[in-house]
Image (cartoon, rainbow, N blue to C red; front, side):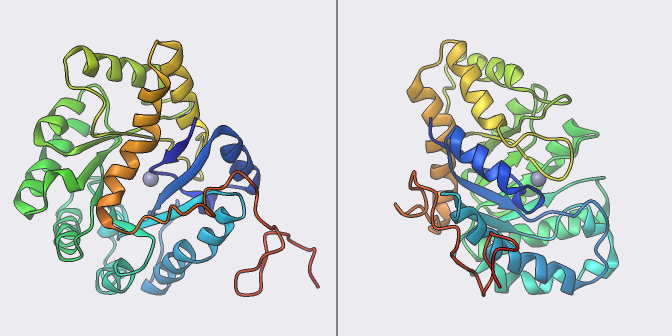
Length: 295
Ligand SMILES: [Zn+2]
C-alpha cells in the first residue's frame, strides 16, 4: 500500500512516528500550517514556523524516506487575534516557494467576521498564486460553517476543483460534492470520523454512482490525541470491506497527487520516496536527526 497523507502536522510528531508511517507505506505528505495549541503573539513567531515547514521538517521527513510538502496560511483560529493580522502580508513570500502546494488551512473556526475577512483575503491569494486552497470546517456548527464556506468559495473565482473542504462527515459531504469541491475526511482515534464510517461513506458514493474521485483521507495527526497511521488503517478497512487494491491506491495515493499536483509543486522524485531510510547523519544547516551524536 502506498500512501500520501494529505493533512498531518509532523512538527508535533516524533521520529518513531516517521518510522512507523514509512513502514505502513506512507511515502508523501502535506503538512498544513495551523496553530500551536496556544496563541502566537507576533508575526515573527509565524515566520519562524513557516521557515521550519519548508526547511527543517522537510529535511527530517526525507531522512525517513517521506516527501514532505506544506501549505501556508493564517489559520482560522488566530485570524481572530489582531496581533496576527500582519501575517497576511508575509504570506506571498512563502506562497512562492517550492514544496508549498496550497494556501491553507483557511476557513472558519467560530464563524466570526475576522475569520471571514482573513478567509476571503486568502482565497484571493490562492487565485493570485494559482494554488489550491485547503479549507478547514468548524467542529461546532459544521453544517452552517460548510454552507457559508461554499458560498465564499463560489464568490472567490477559484475553480471548485482547486478547493478541498476538510474535516467532513456524513452530514456535510453531499453539499461539498454538489459544489464540485474536493471532499476531505480526517480520521480520528475516538471521536468524530473513524475508518469504518469512512468506508461506509465511500461505499455509499460507489453505490450512488459517484465513484471514488475528489475524496481525500487524512490522519490530521497533531499534538492532540491522534494517530498518524489512520490513513493505513482506512486502507485496511477498505480492503476488509471488499474494495480492491486499486481502489485503495486511488483514494490514498492517486487522489492527493491529482489534487495537489494542480500546484505544479509536488516533490515526488525517486529519492524522496525510496524504500531505503536515507543517511541519518545528513545535516540541515549543520544539524542532523541524530541528537547528541555529533560534537
Ligand atoms: Zn489540521
